[in-house]
Image 1: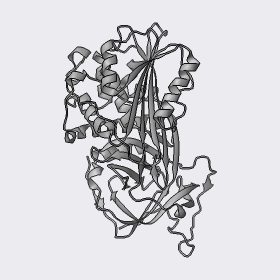
Image 2: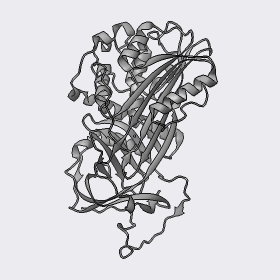
Image 3: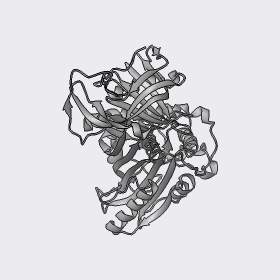
Image 4: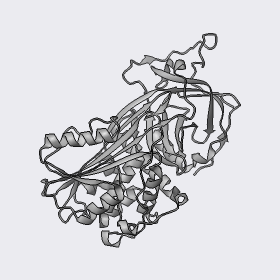
Length: 455
């Protein structure tokens, strides 16, 4: 079905603008995403997009029950798996970290400024083309998530660029994205933009842009900052260097956090051959670790399989567990153009329809995403048949080989951040794996085997 700006039912079904709430505390985890609109290339102005937001006529805002937004969580997870697959193909098998929520909201914002086939392609890529009132559902989720996340938005315009007043009004009233005019001095404008991002991310992302092309006419920026504490903290005195098994051949030394007895909910999914554990933060968020039993497993396919298996419904009661988890410090930058092209959004970069934003031609120049994560002892500063295996009263969960993780909001199941860790310490030298390890009598909390305890 082709949609256009004038026939949007979603613009009449959205929620009220939420008040800003204090985020929980855990080391900084921040995210910014950016989309550029440029002019002067084949006479088409271009757009630069950041993080997320979506808009609707403010006077027509309505509420959607939060319990009906589970389809949004499924859609965001599917987009995350699709992006993980494309980025893995493009960038190889290094560490990855991004926010599927942030990217979903950025593209949803863009969809509301799009018409006809451009809008249809965006909704399809977002996995919400069959969701009733998708923008309203996203708006309800966003309002709820502001209890957990700090979200900031900004709209930068080149002086004299004609943007429709309704777009500007709805952006400010609905998203809190106040417009600001660029001076035309690229160096000064760059400093202003980077300062805004630095402040919005509490210093975690000091430089969003390294250059600002003269052809940029519009810049949409949004920053997400998450801070929280583990519900059960790790003791820093137990953190020490330990072995992380990169694959069957190589290892690397990492700073490993440890807990002798940690209240952990975890289980085996035998069909996917993975172990899944949930480490709760204070508040309604969790760090979900997904540990493949074989490091060579395809992460993006695994994430898709887990979503279809509805793994969230399998978490048992917490039980005393011996835990090892590597400390993480990630800074990740993604240029999403190629990934979005592979998801069917190539038209955004050539001949899209953005008439709801401006009468003239407008094309997307780039979609850039920066994310930062620090994971420490205090916390973070970011269908087939299924069989579930439980563990004995004292078990071992050992994140000492490549793993996936999801930082999620528990009430909605929304994946806020998604990461694939193949090497927690990429700057350290790699060593060949030894075949034998001393077990017991050496004062270590854990055996050096990569195998977890089996039931």
